[in-house]
Length: 378
Ligand SMILES: Cc1ncc(COP(=O)(O)O)c(C=O)c1O
Image (cartoon, rainbow, N blue to C red; front, side, top):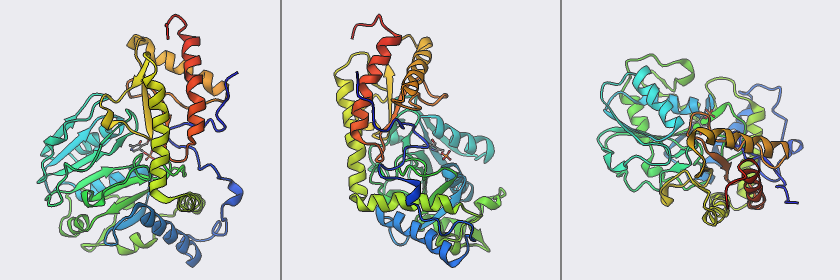
């Protein structure tokens, strides 16, 4: 009998909580109190400060909690900042395509340069024009393809770089000098709760905010500017709308765990180890491969695998059979890829996942594959 993972939670979002998480350990003192009370505010500010410390966010960058998870944070950035310059949009998966739709159909910008790639590929980043604004998703959770580095973004660029970093933050070393408005959520690498996001603004983004006003309306939930000036208190813990203090405590607990367990570099290593366990297993098999075609662009967090010798029309069905079987066996929950991506098996390999659990999962995937596709010689 194959050993089962101790923790079957391999969903790519919301993702599993850290290995020592327990609801009893959360500080519940702020619950039932105003989010503006001195105590609650101190907890929110502590969350922001620990985020800054772990991610090495420069002191002159602004950090705020946003409503609406990563979606809220990235839309806040686009609604407030875009429109002054042409925009290069790089998109290679479901989430990138959502931001394309926002820019094309909602904001209706006049000068859009769209650089898209099929699932498994990264668009050619050489098309980036530093005079333009740029919108991209650093790690496309739905295809397991991520940007390998920020070398292609010059520091003396004129446009802003707006980045959805939701399944990258806390698992890779983001180079803040290359990013002007960065969005992420707690429900990815932190194993936190959904519903809340974070936005990080560079001084250049603040300068844009204060010198330019888009011609479209800004919904209250995205409003971070008043009388031509950035609303500083929003970036000092005064959230725009009421925030969940239970989610704050849960995220604080994850941040403290990170700091007690080696900080960002240890989290990056944990995710890399998870990826390497899958990489070794894949390299020894001919029926499975990464969706990502270029080794340099393969995500260590959203690990997407393709079943090679299955006709495309039956691939999704087989993946669903594997997903359901492994969930029934409490081996793995939620390992089918996103429904709008090309069919893939998707294993979350973020820092809260234990490598031993991934190692235990892989033989089960093979067993399930053989069970539902028994004629293949492996
Ligand atoms: C890359 C990326 N961006 C944005 C989102 C949307 O996140 P949320 O639903 O938390 O707003 C996700 C969710 O999986 C994602 O993977």
